[in-house]
Image 1 (cartoon, rainbow, N blue to C red):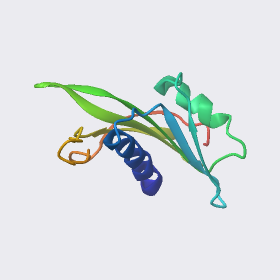
Image 2: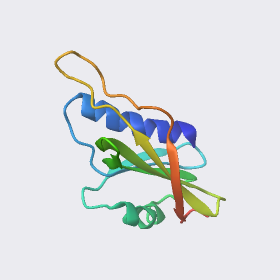
Image 3: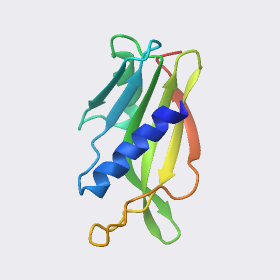
Length: 127
């Protein structure tokens, strides 16, 4: 799962580095290695399990990634929220990746800050 999660976060960072916004996105991979990516501007984190359940052919692994913020002592910190789904596991895993926004003028690329935080579990349509 780690490579797919990393790919989802890198996709968001790449878009941000080009001055573009991340729309809610699902990346999935079947057991035989077929991959797909879908964006859905209206999708919410609560919708992601239902979205993954409708993917055909059925994926063995999928992640949904959303952009938002996490309240910190010094204000709202930008973050990517990732929900990970894997066949054979009872629940999904929800992670938060804090990140910098970078600076296009100086060429500083956005990047993750520290390690991701596991924030919960949810329904897994691939179970």
